Length: 162
Image: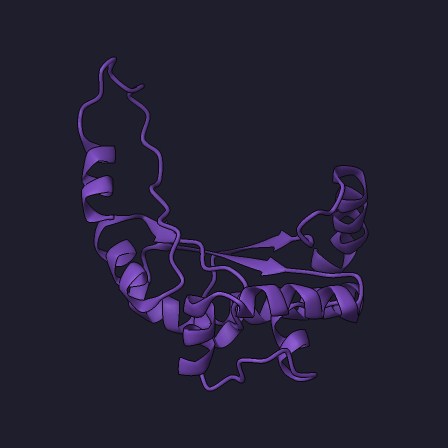
């Protein structure tokens, strides 16, 4: 990843436009977050609790972008499916374990990772991440959501997020 970031900064043929842009390194784990702190302008951790956001902010420092991706759902079933899928990834399980969370989709874990109980629950999750040090929070509708219904879901959440 270090070599890749170096290559991104290297001269290109033809030359890239002379426009600065932030380099945001996809990072959830401690090593990638440390690399983002060292070589990038920030990181976008995804699907983790505000406790992780606070830890990521400490690693990144105060001057790096922290753009948290917050999954959302419209039902407990969809939220549980999202969490179950993510728990199938060893790296995700390891991060949750390090934070002291269970590695199965319990009734306490699911809503702490994927709010599903309406606009107020989503707004509370967003505020928790902002309070933990996120600069921005991006909402992620469930994988497979059709474009129109996904936009409708986001529009319905907008008043609670203002």
